[in-house]
Length: 280
Image (cartoon, rainbow, N blue to C red):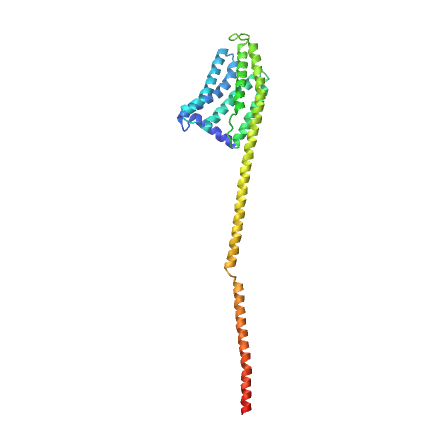
């Protein structure tokens, strides 16, 4: 949960006191979708007119279009916090509308469970340090899902009256059809997010294994170097015991040589004495 808390703090900071003050414009344009997603069910169940709901939805659609443009052309930067805020605002918008419409159309329970699964996968990716982005299927499926939810609330607010010549029954049927169309797209999207998360985790494992193997190779290289140094020292530096033995051997050789010299000298002296006795 550490990464999620960190991103939550960054998001609140991006809405209150960002480094670039101009980024307040795109950030608040994104956050209005989260506010509108919570406000729309309240308005629909409190008896708001279809015109009021259409006005709110038009405002939210415009904000979804303008937040990216404002980040690029007004703030002159697209921050990581802004991208996360945009994705979270979209999820709050869709999940709030789904929860609110279940009482009217229970079929949206399936959409809610699938969207919740996508949110959990993305939250896990955030926790692992990744920043998942919407893929092509995710960008496509948001349109039929949003249209299904909007039409469902519109049909509920109409009651028995028609709106722009359209009956509430026709609008409700269209809403249910779009909901069913969204379900396979959501399933495909879940599979894609899971495969992407698995691929990223495998890449991380491979990098970790490579770093571990490199560390082990470095350690073994250090060990071999130390062994070689020890061998070189033992060769270049003679041991004291060997030196003593050599010294002792040299002394023994000297003693032996002296004894041999004395032996050789003694018989000569004896011969000289004998010769002396003969001549005497």
